[in-house]
Length: 302
Image 1 (cartoon, helix red, strand yellow):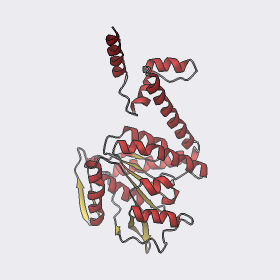
Image 2 (cartoon, one colour):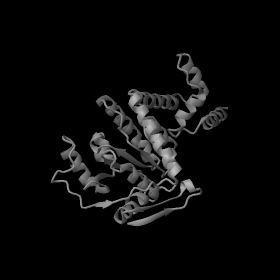
Image 3 (cartoon, one colour):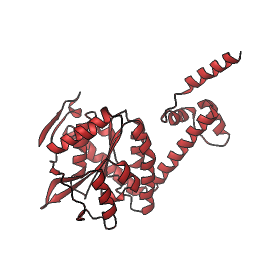
Image 4 (tube, one colour):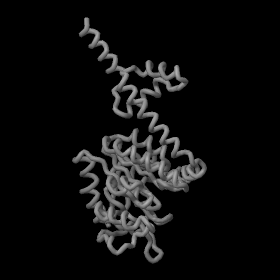
């Protein structure tokens, strides 16, 4: 075990906890290097049974790789995850905690997976480090599980004691998914990983008050997810709407105000501020450049 000490600007941003030495070395090589030097994103899955400590380990990993990680980038539902991806700065960590909890129907699970897949490109463009905490890895969409996730960390108990994990690299993770998905089994004899370790239940985001706020936020989000099975459908609608709006902007080259007026004729009430926010998250530079281009075109024609 290695002691990790992070000194933030405030007590709430500071942290100290233990981390497995081999896990730390792999994070240095495969997370920090990839994000900082190789200009890529990193998508990591952490799964385990309820109460196994998977959220604790995910928070420790996230805080070690990204010392700026705070409660605002710990999310518990699809809409919050989507918003966090668009708001995050390059190289930052987002933790989607208990990603599929409360989604009891197959339709809801499918909708959430579609949202995740649609966000993977945005995650790559911004070089984000995303940790998804799941009840089980086998709930993930095949593309996300096999091809886009870098590794799986499976958290489990041994002899009634929490704090154990196994790491499945990209090759073993694929084999596990293909052999174990039918019965959600991690014990297939063909899938053995030599990478295992321990962790301790130290909250990694600062003070006891922060831990209390984290648990309250988590509990409220899980209650809302259970009570609102349409949340995944709303995410899908918003994602499709935003893509259509952005494509319309690119094709027509209308200003945000012109777009708002056009949509208003069809009873689509989107203000130009809303349209600006939608388009700019896809990299649109705003109306200033559009107006400058119009002036240049006019001057050239004169």
